[in-house]
Amino acid sequence: MNYKRLNYSLQLLLIIVISLVLVACSSAPAASIDITPQSPDITITQTSQQEAPFNRKVDTAVYPGGPAIIFRMDDAAKWWNEEAVEQIIRVFGEQNVPLDIGVIPHADGNDSLEMPFLRRYLDAGIIDLSIHANQHIDKEFDTSQSGTSYEELKADLIKARDQIQQYYNTTPVAFTVPYDYFNEEGYKAVQDAGFKIFSTQKAVEFNPSIYPVDYSGNRDINGMSRLCTVSDVAQWNADKKQWEDILPFSELSQAIDWGLKNL
Ligand SMILES: [Zn+2]
Image (cartoon, rainbow, N blue to C red):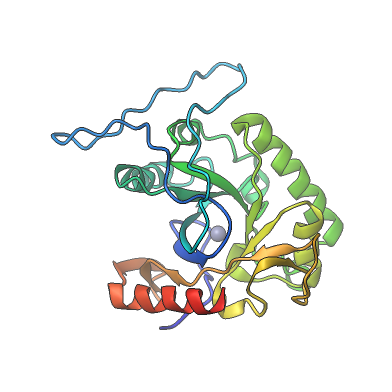
């Protein structure tokens, strides 16, 4: 299986990847969603648009221990294919499978984190939020290639997390790497901004670890767990820059086995 880098255009989103881990995050949602057999639809309370503080009604279930698969979808940003993002979330909700949504806080430099529809699925206990990049510019967390700096990345992430806390009333602990490019300065910026989980593709993750580690992979209580993705769910066509068919289960199963042995 070709674990290529996700080097696609900014307009393309809908990366769904699997992380197999022994610790972290949630397993199944505490599903207080209403699904009827006749019409498998999710009843979700509309969130008020007023400025009152948002408080979700249902949390995803507490992680019970043991191996778990995390489904991760990147590139959630205001005005970026919100309809498609919502459709995928609903599929997970209908199956009672929680989904991690990677929010881009400032896509191309614009405020892009406030998406009312995500509040509804937080409220229903279907999703949790991570932070995916800040602006999502090319190779943003590889300072040697993007022109960004440690100080700038760290300050922007702290600000972004505070904004997410204010709008969604939840504090992301995981950071998912845009384009899967990062260097030591980019890694440290994420770590020093206070994140606890760092997730990139396994093809470029040289120190996968369920324990907190520093950039070089040494145990460090102030470091991050490096829960790399083990597979996309669908085939990526690099020439056409589009997703194609869902991968056969045998390939996904092999990827999960890799995770079991290495994480
Ligand atoms: Zn992305």
